[in-house]
Length: 221
Image (tube, rainbow, N blue to C red; front, top):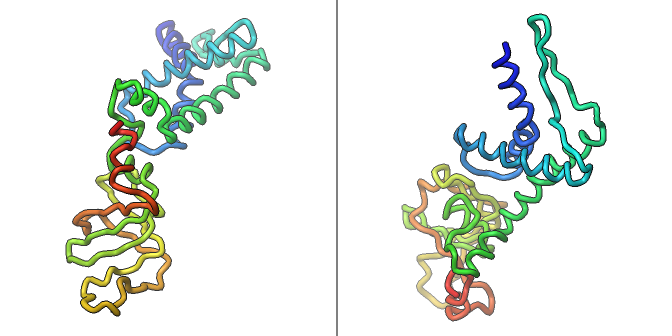
């Protein structure tokens, strides 16, 4: 019984971190965390939450504790309502802040500027490219057809690999005369394209963009 209570108290200690981690996972997208990583992230979150709450209140205590009596266990919530309030505030504030920083690629952008890394905050190159390159694309299908449009939505998992292409047009690959249209309208809101159908994807230059300006991008300076 004593060992069980101690384990439950450890769980109670990291409960704020678990809640913050689950909120971050709900906000961001990515692969499921392995168990050991969940424990590490929950511990880190809990430490930061209790540290910040302690700095605000000049004291700290676990959010919940467990006590055993007469063969039963009792869950005890902290009687300090102000402490509960600040813990909840940081449970919500921290994952939202960290998720925003990740989406903006701010930590890794700073590290890249210091020549420490070439990585980004994204989980994979597929999501990284679509997240950072906001531009028209041409999708070359395996059946040799070409579709041009705006990548409105895309899978976070490259193995799933779906792209929702808004305002799509077919590239007229049969155009031979100057008067022939370059594009054929589809009159569709969008196409949902599977990675299995794609040969490769071309990301178009933006207006006024040149090869020289591309070579001076974040990863090349």
